[in-house]
Length: 311
Image 1 (tube, helix red, strand yellow):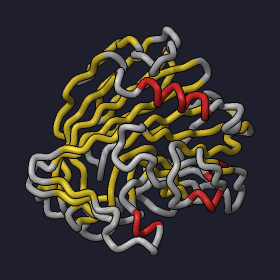
Image 2 (cartoon, rainbow, N blue to C red):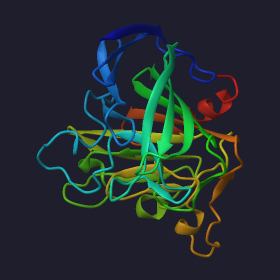
Image 3 (spheres, helix red, strand yellow):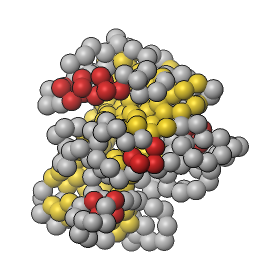
Image 4 (tube, rainbow, N blue to C red):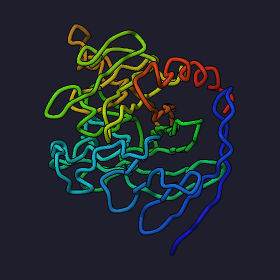
């Protein structure tokens, strides 16, 4: 069965958005997302280790995520099978690896859609161990925007200690993530990319450092394209630390404090919730043309930060 939704775009903080429509088509375990009649992305939620968005089409009309392992293509790396598109995961959830797809890994199970309204998909998920025992749950809302030439995804997730006390443990393996095309990488065959943070760190120096935003840009389809991730000022531990790698993994991770900085005690990054407690994180992905200056990343972050609390 196929369900189709035509939805008006919601606001962008304090700035007006382009007057386009979003179309959602739910079929075969994925939701197709179109903006202005063109494919933007698809949300895969059934028969997967954890839900993810793939492909994501940037403003240049090219894919902004690595194709493997969803597609077998030439000139791509085949490391880290769990790096699929854009996703949220973590490597230590009450001691269970819910990040990788290695032996006895945990999964994030789609339970139901809570609604599709405005420009948003809202969903309830359960996190389970390898045997299917529930660990916790989440409620997530994913919003899709256009803003002039930019394409935007807002990802809001509320972690819920629904099964008793919950610890998201101190590890670099997480969390709000995207895997970029090979040509956007900083190092490696064909690499033409760079990493820039709001704190002024560049390339490999950005790993593990705190910043309000990070931009990762490089050549895709012969043109310079970029992806910025914004950390909401309302998020716990803002500004977040970043698990951003020179080979194209790009992730905001507020939990890995000891893993990022061994001068801090083990477990310094643990996020502990008592039974029934919740923690909410909000992130914005901006897909833009050019480097961070041409993409106006700092300016767009200021608009985003000013709009938090009004959406």
